[in-house]
Structure formats: structure tokens, C-alpha cells
Length: 148
Length: 83
Image (cartoon, rainbow over the protein chains, first blue to last red):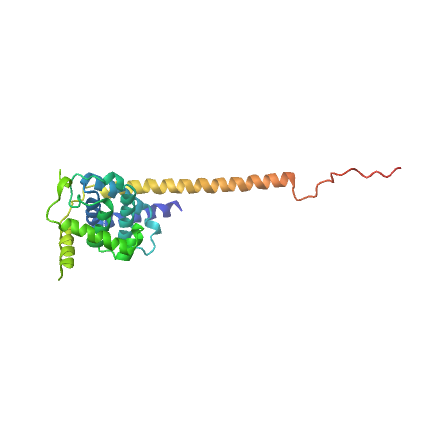
């Protein structure tokens, strides 16, 4: 029994290392786009990956990348009040919810219904928020007090 | 391509241009943290089982001692027939 547990831990470690080596960059990009800050992105990514590690044996046939992204998004949504006033980053002009929708839809390519289910919004609302965020990003210049 | 699709494509390119480098040791730190999480979860589970078994044993001992299924002696007045 003890031997079996040690072998399972070793296998899990190996698979998890391979997973992070392959998907870590993409997950870190998602975290960076959401938080607009490299240090905050790492603080968001490491616990999300730890949660994925803890769930590794119970994944069944699920894609670990999907699990890690869901964990990341859920953690960001819970702590989004901390990221209301980001200092820099590509999406600093957007609100946390707009950032979530834009990143899920356009960077991750998640379907509208799936993103809506993950965020607890209706698909129409996701479409509206996404259109508003895209319009804000494509606007020529930040108007007024948005740029310090 | 209409302006809607053009804007979406532009934003998609903007998002793809963000390529942060993964700092070394992220996988090891996450694995260590995940392992601690697993241990904690396992400990809570073991504690729950231990409590459940202890409660079951305590109930069995109490039941064997008090035998609550036997009929209680009648609490009414004793029979009195020498009058």
C-alpha cells in the first residue's frame, strides 16, 4: 500500500512537470492578461496549478489544461476586487469582468455558452460585455482620466 | 471582413502578443503546495473516519450496557391483592 502510494506520487510528479512545461506559458499569459501585472499573475498561477496537482488523480478523462484554466478563472473572479485599478498591462483599461470575458473568448477561444456558464452570466450578456470590451480596446485613445 | 470581425481579429493579435516567460521553479513550487494540500485533505478525511468509527463504537457500548430494547419494568402501582 505504501509502495503504491509512493509510486503514484512519483508518476503524478512526472506527469505534472510535463504538463507545466507544456502549458505553463499559456496559463501564465492568461494570468498576466487578467491581472495586468507579472507578480500578481504568478501569485494567481501557482495556487491554481497547486489545485490542479491536488486534483490530478481524480481527473479521469478531463483535460488538465481545462481544469487549470477553470481554477485560474475562479480564483481571479473571487479576488477580482484586488485588480480593479491595475498599474499597467494590455487590458488595464477594462474592468475585471471585461478582462475575463475577453481573455476567455478571444485569447483562449472558449465558446460563448461555455464562457457564460463558467462566469455565471447569460450568453447574451457575455456577447454584450465582449463587444463593449473590444470597442474599448479598439478606441483610438484612452479618454480623459483613464490615463494618469 | 466587416469591422466587427476586423476589431476582434485585432484584439486577438494584441492578446497573442503577450508572451511572458515562465519563471523557473513554478512547477516545483506548485507541486509542493499541491502535495501539502493533498496531505491536508487526506488528514481531514482520516479524522472524519476516526470520529465516525469512535461514535459507532461508543453507541454499541452504550447499547450493550443499557439494553434500551428490553421492556422497562412497569411504572404503575404494584399488584395488591391481599384485601
